[in-house]
Image (cartoon, rainbow, N blue to C red; front, side):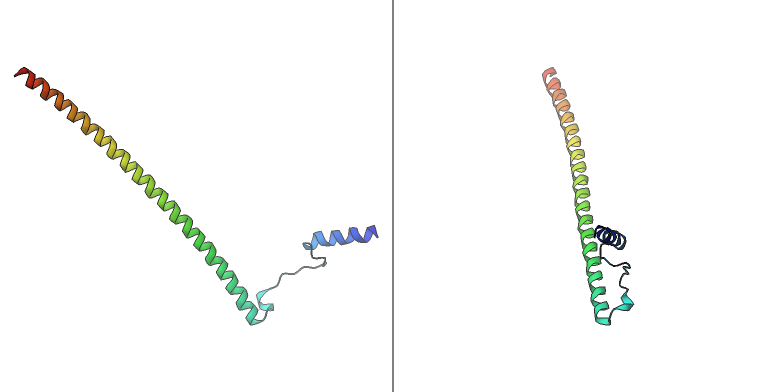
Length: 102
């Protein structure tokens, strides 16, 4: 009895767990036309779902890139604004000095 169970376990491990000594995949040409069409539709729907997921990921990445680009441009604008403020402060100090010398 133990030998029989051991043989069955070996058969299951060799055949992918089906208990058959030979496990052959179903080929599309072995199916009726309706089943082949349904299988094809199922596979195409799965492909479309993967493409949609990829598109959504691409959109998210684009949004992140656009946000990073916006943040970088905003940082550049702030730096430019800081430089302009420094210039205005320097000009204002020069003007005050000139007014005091009059």
